[in-house]
Length: 128
Image (cartoon, rainbow, N blue to C red; front, top):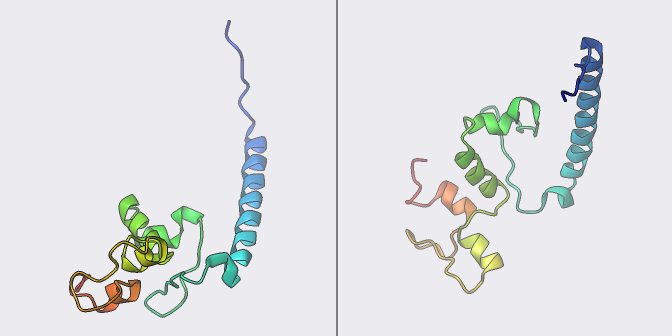
């Protein structure tokens, strides 16, 4: 026996879309307010800036500005998010969570392989 499911009218679909948009915007605004507080983002969070030194704002619209910057490559986005939140598998992270593991830079004389060191000094990542 076939069950008949009526399709929503155009008006009800627009109302549904609008209510979802309002709901998502409310959630995003609450999240942004929490994020602005230092407790919301944590001490290790890396601020991102565009070429004009403006903050890159968090957004979910069209994948957000961050995801677009990584050309929609999931693996690149994953690695970048780990670096941004300082949860990348580097010496600084291992020192915080696995202190018995090696945390020195393997390619330099730096005592701790830190995020700043990798971005600015490490010969292993020079040119990236």
